[in-house]
Length: 104
Image (cartoon, rainbow, N blue to C red; front, side, top):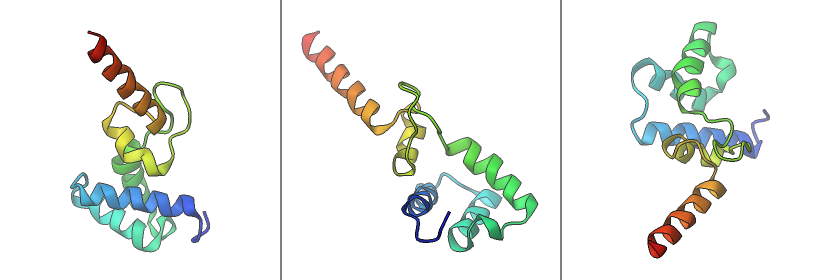
């Protein structure tokens, strides 16, 4: 992606959120810091593999578990912790739950 691409900014914000919330440790943390500073292209093949395996495969949810829609980077951190739902579905589920509690 281009350096001025808002999607890349959102991805960087997601990576920063992982660091801020102490979700990364050791090599994964150091490599993620390097990705934020220099981009993924600056990684060696081995570092790219570690980043993919220990960060991307663990924390990235490509599709909403409810509707199958694409989850934007700006919602990725929350999706990891809420069962893989996008913001709209998470909001819908909360409304349904609140309605059930009120009716029950």
